[in-house]
Image 1 (cartoon, rainbow, N blue to C red):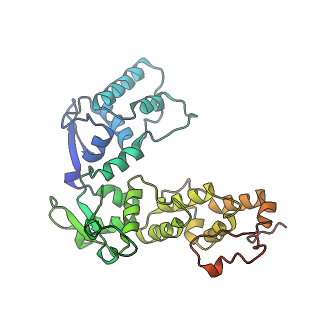
Image 2: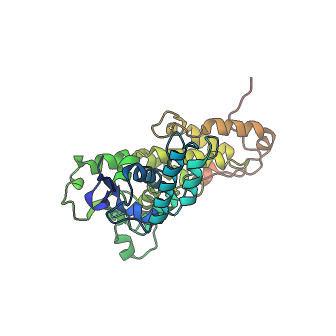
Image 3: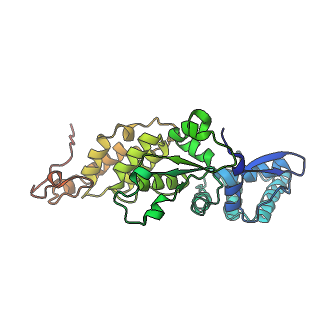
Amino acid sequence: DFCDQNEMITLMTTDGHAVPCLDGLLRARCPKGPQAAAGEELSVVLPLLQWIYAARVQDPPLTSGDGDIEHFARIIRLAERWGLRDVGELQERIMAKRSRARGAGTLPEDLLTAYRNKALKGRFSFSCPAWSNKGDTRDDEDMEVPLEGGLTALLQLRSEYFRAMLSGAWAESCPTRDEKTVVTMHWPRDQMARLLEFIHGGTFVAKAEDLRIAVDCASFFGVPSLLHHVREWIANNLKVSTAPTLWRFVETEPLLKMQDIDCCEDAEDVEAACFEFHLEHFSELAGIKVWESFGGDDETNDASEEEPPLHTLSIE
């Protein structure tokens, strides 16, 4: 696994273990975090780091034994000394029963905030010069500023494209380690900016017009979690006025119908969601008078049709 040294810090536990950590995210999650000395034994530090970086707790959860309770208390005390932003959520998760709903604490928010504040100390940034002035009204100087790349390890983990680029196979990944490297990307700058934010915990799809862009970016850069995001957005935004168009969009995109994509085992079955919505709202959909579409031209969105056809749906 590739991690740049300038993104890392080494913590020493009280029992003599050296633990490498991603420094920028540690500071974002724990404003009072240590500079070198961890302040506890490895058995206490590792569970806390697991929560900080992955929002996960020990499995199985702690029991009511005296030893477990004391160990748990040491983890919480260390989290409080480090200033962990979601220490309350950590405490609830460790003591919760398995049936309790599990959240990610403030990890997504902390990661995105650190990325936007350029606090992750990443070695790479990205420039999109060929697309700088297309449809963008910002000053040329702003457009020429490279986009912050963020965590190299996270780029590799979430994108097949960046995994290949930044793992040593491409020349861009081989300059001096202590220098910031600007990588030229022939891709629309606004899309690249949204993709980088998404990789660091942001949201890509805000409206239906974003779906096509999201699928294109997910396909080109190899980001399965972005396809998962698209599926969830469609399933959560089905309406009588847009459901047939969204279903057509799903049927034209084979990637959205694949359920065996790595890292997306729990992905929304968006085809099933569209089908069930059509069944539930069959009579309303059959009576639509004005068609709402997205991303198409006037010829494909002709409101002169008195009753646009219901999307292909037959019940034997």
